[in-house]
Image 1 (tube, each protein chain N blue to C red):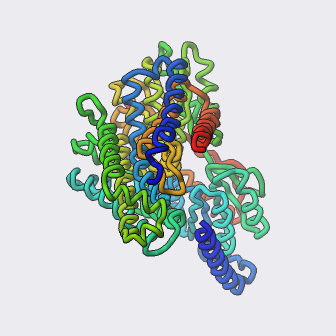
Image 2: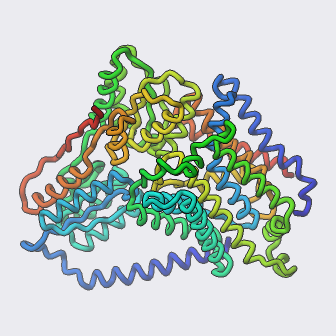
Image 3: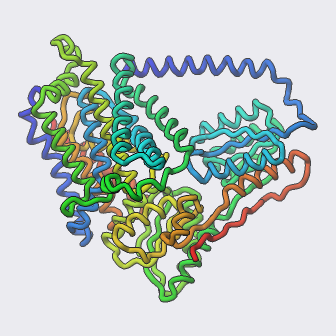
Length: 311
Length: 314
C-alpha cells in the first residue's frame, strides 16, 4: 500500500509539473484576450456528460448550428464530475472564447467557474440546467415540471376507468427526478380513481429499471400504467413487462431517445416526452451568436416539449 | 491455507446466518417475498453480480483487487453487440466478447506482475481507459437492434432451461467449476498460497506471475460473461453499463468473509454475499421502501454483517 501511495504521489507531482509547464506557455502568449471584431465567433460549450445520448444529441445540434452560422465551437466533456467541469471552463477561458455555453453537472458547484468567466468578461449562457450563482445572460431549457404534467395528462386521458400506476424515479435527489415527479403528481393526484401503487428509484439506468420493475411485479400484478422519469428506465421496465406477458400496460418515458421513439413507433411504449435536445443545442448557439453581436436575448429561452405517441 | 479447516464452520456460518435472518424478516413483512417466482427473479438478478464477484474472489485471494470489472463488462458487451449488429453469427460474437474480456484481464495481470504496478492503481487506470474505449466505440449511444433473431444470444439472458432461467444455470455452473478449482486443484492451492505469502511462494518455485495473470484473465472473462447476460436481458449494450459494479462485487466478497489482505476466503461466502445484496435490493423494492431510506438500510446491513464476522474471528 505504501508503494501505491508513493506511486500516486509521484504521478500527481509529474502531472502537476507538466500542467505547470503548459500553463506557463499559455501565459506567455496571453495578451489579455483581444476581441476579434470580425472573423468567426469562438463559442465554448461545457457539457455535463457525453455518456448520455441526450447530451450527445444536444452537442450535435449545437455543432450543426455552429457550422451553419460559420462559428467555431469548442466542446469539452465534464464526465459528470463538477471538479472536472471547473477545470474545463478555466481551459475555455484560457482559449479566449467569445461566449461560454455551460450545461452544469451541478447547479451550485458550477457557480465559481461562471464567476471566473464573468471576471474574464466572457458572457455565459446556461443550457438545460441552471446555475445558482454568477452572472448569466440567458438560460435555455425545457421545463421538466411541464413534462411531468404532460405524461400524467396522457395517462389520465387514456385510462378512462382509472387504474394502478407505477412510478420509476430517477437518481434520488437529482433535479430532473424531483421536477418530473412533481409535475407528474400535480396532475395525477387530482385525478379520480388513479393510484400510484409503487414509487421506486431506478437511477435513470436501464438495467436498474428492469430489475426494479421485476421486483415490483412480484407484489403488484394489477398495473395499468408505468411512468418512468427517463426513457432508459422505461425501456428496462418494458423488458420486464414483456417477459411477464403484460403487453397492455401503458409505458410512458421521458427524453425521446432514439430507442424510445422506435419503441413507441412499434407500439411497445405508449409515449415519451420529447425534450428536443438538438433544438436546445441549436438555440444555445444561436443565442450565443446574438449575444456576441450585442443583440438582446431573453433571460429564459424555453424550448418546447412535445409528446411523442403512437397512432 | 493454514488453519483453514479449523475456521471453516465459524467463518461460513456468519454470512449464512445473516442471509437467513434477512429472509425471515422479509418473508414476515411481505407475502410476495418467499415465492418460487420471486426467487427465480431474484437469483436471475443476482447472477450478474455473482459472476463478477466469483472472479473478484480469486483476485482478492491473491492479495490484489480489480476495479476495472465494470468497464470490462461494458466494453466486451459493446464489442459483441456491435459485431451482431453487423450480422456476425451470435456464437462467434459471444466467443469474441468473452475473449476480449479475458484479454483485458491479461492486460491487468501483466501490468500488476511485469509492470510491478499496485493492483489498485493498475486497475484504476484500466477502468478509466476501458470505459473511454467503450464510449469511443459506441459513440456514447446504446447499441440496439441486433439480438432479435439470434436464439443463442437471446437464451443467455432470457431463456429458460427446464423452467430455470439460463443466467441462474450459468451462475451455478461457474460456481461449481470454480469451487472445484479452488478446493481440489493445484491452481486453487497456489492461489491461496500466493495471497498468504507471495515471497515464500516465489522461493518455493511457484510461477507467481503467470498464475496472477490467469486469475485476472478469469475475472475479465467472467465480467464479460456477466455483461453478455445483461446485454441479452436488456436487448441493448449500454455505454454506461456496469458503472460502479466493482463496488457491488467487492461488497459481495467481503460480506462472504474473504479477507481483503489475501490468502483467506471462500467462494461459497461470495455466493452468500451476492445473495445478501440481491435479497436486500429485491426486498426493499417489494416493501416499497423510499429510495432515500434504502441506501441507509443497505449501508447498515453491510456494516452489521462485517462487524458480526469480526466478532467471530477472534
